[in-house]
Length: 181
Image (cartoon, rainbow, N blue to C red):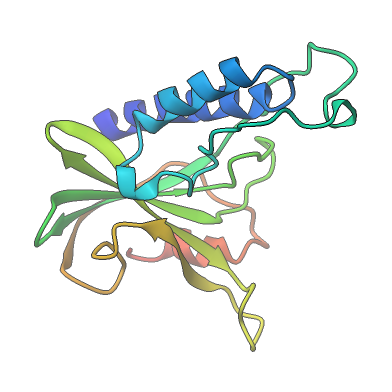
């Protein structure tokens, strides 16, 4: 689990940088950061994690007046589960907060599926825990892009769960945190 936590810490740091570069009118710096972030992402996930190259600068009103805006806090990592996947072998699922969250926002919204491809760890799928398209108002997992064969329904056997930080007690994601997934 430690190797995946280190991988995610590095990814979250690069993701934070990308969000901060959105606030400056320098497309070259921003697009370089997109490519750095993509080193952590499977190619089938490109564009699904905010890693979209920009071709045009936004209007000046979009950019903050002061250049020294602080970095966002970044994601909270709540739980990591290790599975054995019939096709991909080791599969880690990291349960995390939104990418632009404040550290005090303890809301579980995303599951990042992490696999090893050619001896390199990468995020290969994202699922979103949301009530967005729910008729009954209950949250459920919605596909956020990535490798189609990765999901909660098929070909996985739970090996280990590592709970790291508990979501807010009013968060619907608390049930996911407490469950055996």
